[in-house]
Amino acid sequence: MRTAVIATSLLAASMAVSCRAAETGGNDAPEPESTPPIVQPGAPGQPSREISAAEAADVAGTTYTEADVQFMQGMIHHHAQALAMTALVPERTEREDMRALALRIELSQQDEIGMMETWLQQRGAEVPAMHEHHGADAPMMPGMLTPEQIAALAAASGATFDRLFLEGMVRHHQGALVMVDELYAISGAGQETYISEFAAEVVADQGAEIARMNAMLNAMLEEPRE
Image (cartoon, rainbow, N blue to C red; front, side):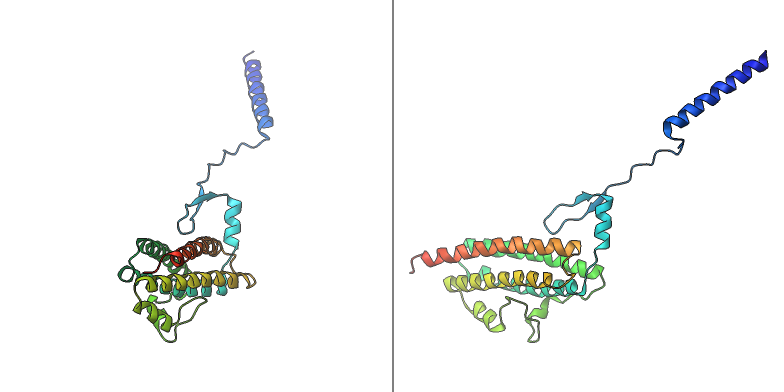
């Protein structure tokens, strides 16, 4: 009698296990733990964002090119001259809107230079020295002012300086947009995530500043002369 009871208990236990296996597809492995989020840093001035594993794989598979490296190196030279130009503003203008414009350009381009230097360092590429754009053999990127034009700007003051600065910086910003166009004209260039986001930011920010500076120039032309 006792043997029959034991046999019945074992049979019941076996049936219970079989039912659980059928419900779970026979897989008794524990549920995988949730993976930590994948965070992609944003471009200068932009927040970071969470991306999926598939997006991360796409990002990892997109590599930079030599053209991307040269673009970043050239843009550092380009930004460095813009900082040299904005440094002239405080002592040569009498307009608060000019000072505010110069400060906005200075802060944004300093931030971008830091990002570009880090990008180059992380890839083992040469980081241009900030003073190199002053030399006679310094590369002349699109829109950059010649040494003679910089000298004329430094020698001016008042309304003449304001006009020369705005005209020069509009041309300078337009040159940055040309550099972006030239980058994308090269097969395979501009596809790496940071390069793509930075190039888009250059187009948006400097395009907006060009419009702002042209509006300032037009307003100056309408002002009565003393």
